[in-house]
Image (cartoon, rainbow, N blue to C red; front, top):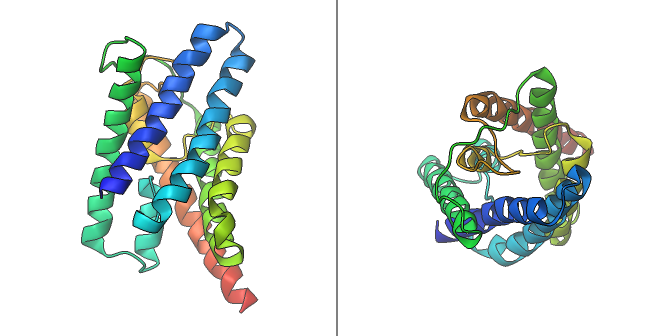
Length: 212
């Protein structure tokens, strides 16, 4: 649980902190997004490498839900993982704000709404879970790099910039910065993420059964 909380805190601190830094250093939106993308992909490689042997490095309630559904984690542990992830995500936002001398807790005003955004979150999470499940079967040693590279790509090919994580989505509503999301837009994002994860689980189970 400590590993899940720590990992999610560092992930969110990276997402929010790099977004603030990007806005500070450049007024070009493309460069801001690039400055937000590269640190996020990089920290995922680090976090999954170092925390994978401890907790599995889920760092994401949607991923935990998938492993719970597959019977690889029990219900009490899954619930505790999700609580730790959410707590860690909020701590990560606070840490990022403190580092950049921002108000510790904020309410985001950044609108991220509409069918195109929801579809983007469905696709982002579908791709993330598919990457995790199929890489675990094919090359488990390459999982940290695969996830880091997938999220790096998904920042750019999805309209939503690939939140793909309910805990991170909740926490980003508490940051009125580059990485923020308006609280009213959080619930549809999370629904889309969970549906994307469920679809990926169904597809991967079918693919892996067919391979056997």
